[in-house]
Image 1: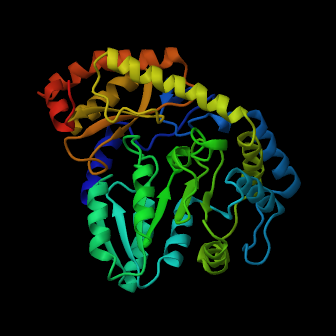
Image 2 (image 1 turned 135 degrees about the vertical axis):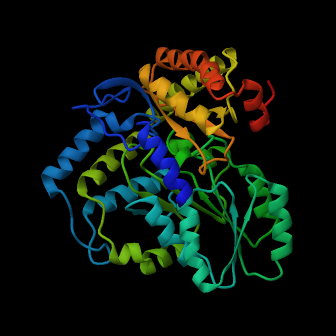
Length: 412
């Protein structure tokens, strides 16, 4: 915590965190901070649906009809908008049982303690989202076996399954569909092969960063690779490309669904999502259930292809090049990262900095989410300016491009 506080203190003094917008309205491309208008490359609203007039109209209609909140535990009565939302979301997911909660963090804390039994074991991917890791902490009060393995190492996973399978009832592997820092993917096909081979293996995947921009009806990256597995517990959030809010839990069987719905504390004790969020969710789900979602996906994919091709031409150290809408350009030392973000903000570009302890100390990078509303010209100007500024920032810290490539194990 001391390290996190030190990093927060440094970045706060530099003006690159804890900022507020000055804008009286947002267009998805720009942001104004301390009076300076900048091109905005910090949004995880990858499809820009939060600015879609239909979602806005759905939210406005809901608030006019039902007020700013519906203050009741869902165990007693739910807003009728919940039923409409969950029916549409279930339709997106091939009729699977779904549960919509206030956030995905709340969803994991509702799901994991209920699904994982006392005789089960949990294996966490080292890069699985913090919200999953936080929920797993609740299992330790029950002395449930939990261990960590290196990111995307299927050989290590299989080795641990073999070691644990005679001692535990179920073995849960928890990972992300798309990892939030570098935008790299989990190895879905390999995971399914392991699940087919070892009946004790249960997959618990968080696909919040894969939602909407990938998959049939925008059902995410995981389902773009394979159909629903009989032991897949799939989770996502609607706070990224879907354009609204809330956590979505999708179940392989009705028994699991009813157990979580009937016993999870979030469903019983917590307040429900406000009507305006559900109104917008209904409208977004309707879009996902039409062919329009594929046009939106294609539009974003072309921009990510352009991002990757341009970064490659400029010889920028792009890490884990994929077609996910998360670009990551390595800069190496934290000081170089601080310097780069300040330089880019001064030049009119806002982006995220990934720095220790979120990443390894010498693996600081510029995390650049791209959304559909960013233009090709926006992307080209951003990357061109990074190519100009990075050598200058490296020189300020007595570092070099060679050092970046070495730290990230990249091939120049």
